[in-house]
Length: 212
Image (tube, rainbow, N blue to C red; front, side, top):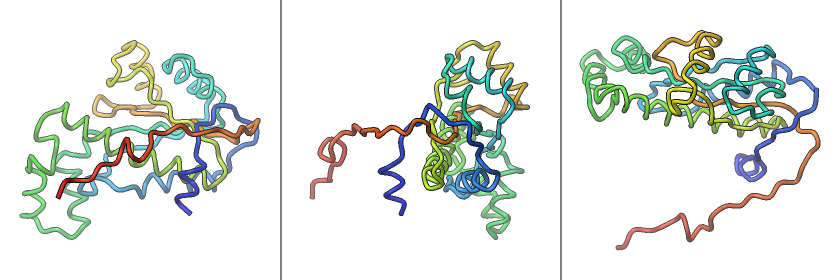
């Protein structure tokens, strides 16, 4: 059940040497691919990293976080701002069966296409969409018995930390200037297994009902 995965999911930072099979990895990636997005634009790319040199570079860019270096597999979750342009966005809308007039109205809409409001808004909304896919993949990882840690603190256009290192990563991952590394999923089988406690705000602190 989804709720069981939500309850049991935790950030795992220490892994065994047991490899993650391609079958299991593909199920995790498929969960991300099927995630919902604004007008189904799907402004993301998932880059699978197994090369140790690339892991080391990404770990360095993430403040030396060891789980990035020692994970069995990394999934780099990338926001692709070109997903909002007339060609790419229009293609998605066409696949939905929308006619040309409707497609044009959506692509040029300030409400439905954030790129019409500028680069910063497009980046903000793209990051928002990528987090949906990230969440889906973390839950599927839990379902598959794979430990996962979401690493968002890294050198990129969002943090503006170490631009030289950020450029090295873009080159290493073959990203263009319209593609932004949003976060990294570090994956591996947990060892040792630790019973973690979740500390969350109470329902009363986060849930409110409108006054009728």
